[in-house]
Image (cartoon, rainbow, N blue to C red; front, top):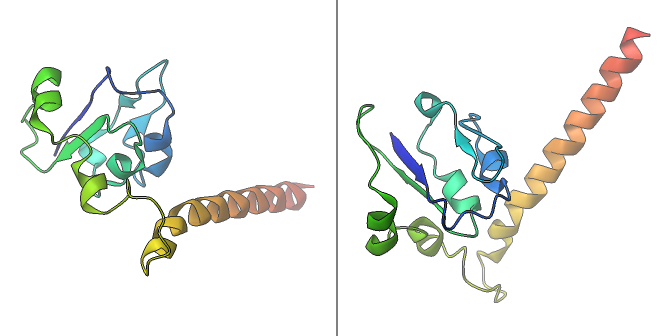
Length: 126
């Protein structure tokens, strides 16, 4: 597994950090830190969540290195996963548009569940 975050494109929104199911990324001052690359499942959720197309993920050997930023910028590969899955397309009322909206709804639901769980744990401790 190899990954890179192109600093020139990253807005620091940390959407990729929240999208990663295995917590590979950690928020940092401007560009998120790739903290646990060995935990990456190559699910591409971080790349899909990045509206700035600043993340590049690819399967590969553990000791492989990502291409340099100028190479990635010139290759046209940044944002390819988003384009392939139609995430950059406007909502047009098509059959698959509801699935694109599902991610934020699931994220909100998991946050609500976490708050309820934390509140329940607090009341049990009393």
